[in-house]
Image 1: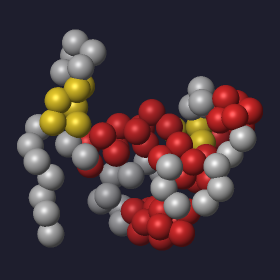
Image 2 (image 1 turned 60 degrees about the vertical axis):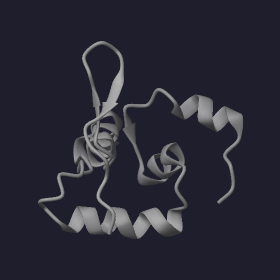
Image 3 (image 1 turned 180 degrees about the horizontal axis):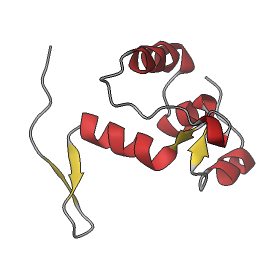
Image 4 (image 1 turned 90 degrees about the horizontal axis):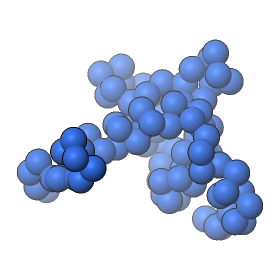
Length: 92
């Protein structure tokens, strides 16, 4: 995976609706890993992963995506600007 140029990162940092390619760049995960993962999440209606919105060019709402990953990683905002971990993640 090649790193995007600084201009691309600056242009994308405040977007609310992102393509899957932009989502992968924001997460810093190799598309070869993340693409099938997203496909699996989309295929499972109970995953809760934010869907692409046709009204906004089939893009995902970034704040909802970030919230989904925070919940997946058991990070919650404590209401005072800090983060806390609810409990350790399960290991296989």
